[in-house]
Structures are given as C-alpha cells and as structure tokens.
Length: 399
Image (cartoon, rainbow, N blue to C red; front, side, top):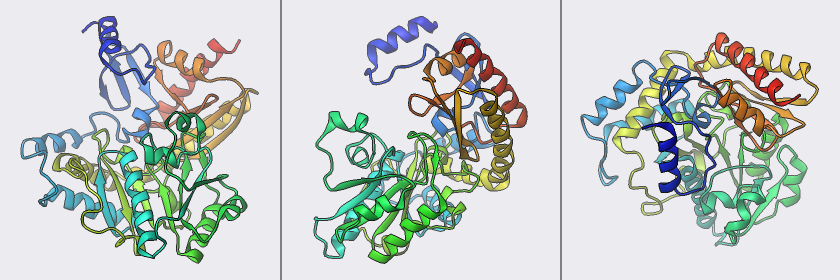
C-alpha cells in the first residue's frame, strides 16, 4: 500500500491516542528498519526497548514459527511445556521463586500490586493500607498502573484512581521515610526510571528502601519492564546493586517483540496469592513462551549481557563527547544501553529531524531528554553512525 494511502487509512480506522510520525515501516534486519518506500533507518529506539535482539536474529524467528506449527494457544486450565521451560529459565536468571506470565508490562504491574494487597490482607491489615510509589515514575496506562505512576499529566483525566498511594521523591530516602506509616504495605519503583528521564537508582537509596521494607514486613516491588533483560548491563538492573525485591516485573525485551510480560515473586511474596486470585486468558500461552524461551537461550549462548557492558561503555564515551561539545546538552545519565541526554531545549524537533532527514530512529523521555535504548546487539560502528546522524539532526535544528 502506498505510504500516504496507508497513513490516511490508519487515521480513519485507528483510535487517535498516538501522534505517529509519517513513516510506514515494513520490515527489519539486524538493527535496521525499512519503510514501504525502501528507506533504510538505523534503529536506536528498539520499539521502546522491546527489540533487544534486533530484527530477524538467527534462530529466533524459526523458534516462533516452529511453535506456530504445533499449537499456539491453550487455556491455563492445562499445562504446556513452553510455559514451564520459560518459567524455569526466567527464575534461574532472576533468582526469584514463582512467575506468572502476562500479556504486557502493564498487566505485570497489576499483578504485582495485587500480590502486595493480598499479602497485606493475609497479615490482617484488612484493606486500610498504603503503597509508596515514586514521583516521575511510569508503570503503565491501566487504572492500577496509573495509580502508582507519578505524573499528573497521565493521571488527572482518569481520576479517581486506586486510593492510598503516596508519592516520594526518587533517590531521596528521607522522603520515603516521611511517608512511612504502620499502614505501609509496599514500595514500588523502577530500578532505573525510564519515561521519567533515565534516572538510575542510587545504591544507598535502593538499599535503604530495602531495609525499610524488611523492618516493617512490607514488600519491595521493582519494575524492570524497560531496564531489565540485560539492558543495564546486568540481567536485571537490581542485580547490579545486590538488592533483591520481593516482587519484580518484566516484559519488553523478554519476548523480543512477541507480547509477553511477567511478574515474579520470592520469599514471603511467593505464596501470597491463592487459586482464583488472578488469571489471564492469553497469559503464558505456548507461542509467547516459546519466544521467551528462545530469547533466554540466546542471551546465555551469545553472551548478550557481556556485550551490553562492552558496547554500553562505548556508547557512554561517545555521548559524553557530545555532552562536552554542546553547551545546550546539560546532563548524561544511565547505565549499559539505557542512556539519556538532557537538553535545555525541547528535543521533539531533533528527534523528528533525525527520523525524517537522517533516517535515525530515536525516542524522547519527556520534553527535553533523548532516550537511547537501541537493540542490545549493536556494535561500535552503529554507535558511530548514530552519533554522526544525531549531530546532523542537532545542527539542522539548533542554529
């Protein structure tokens, strides 16, 4: 279908909740995307940190196709081998004890919140308990996930949300302590804030929150939907701090584009839920779990996390050079292959120029931060090419 006709048809039939760029992508290979006009793009957005292995990674497509030829959905009234294998592998790399597969990261957050509420209820706290979340956070668009998302812009049109949510300042332990009460049943936060501006947790902060939870028998929930699956340079970002959550969420790169998420629990949280407390018709079906199994196999066999540490250091060096070169770039934050540059000006025009003129896919994190979450399989040459195209976009916009 010709591009303009496709865009016109999309505007007619699709619910208008996205402001899309005027590009119709058709295929991908490696870390490149191709549009319907034959244009080739360097992808440093990875479908918002989803395509960890890039496009058409050797063996991945074949594993998904093989499962389609067997069976790709069974109800959770029965067992299926791919879900068992994916669960076993995910628990092994995370060190958690139980897993529930969902269709998305947002659904994983919903399940994590339900564990916290059920755990509090089981302790005899009734329903009069509180959850501490973080300002600037982003956990998803469903009503439960919105309730713990610390951004009024997302929340206000959909109030009232879940009550008894208190918002602390990320990386400020005193602000968490100031909100703590005998009603506090859980703390939820991203190990590295993504949408809020690429802010990694400080070690003393995350360890301090862990200690507060231990002292009060509250649960620590860590959202690893974007920063997990190797992106930070550890399989899960919290592993780099030596702090283990009671509950964690994963999604995005877990399926490399196949829609799958998970919430995982350990210790006292692993037995909080009972049969009938939760469910998902499509959650953990054979197709998505076969994809997750293959992703986890590839991560181990091809040493993906080790590669992230190597290429992440190179990306850091090159972005640091940009930061020093331009006085309107004021900060550089992140870990591994989740990094951000903060500007004194809106980055929307730069991102748009990069896409339309330089054939470079970038995404923002708020109005003035460019977020770098490329496929985890990029190489130094890809970083060099990205910087070249980004500089061209910057100079075209900032005159």
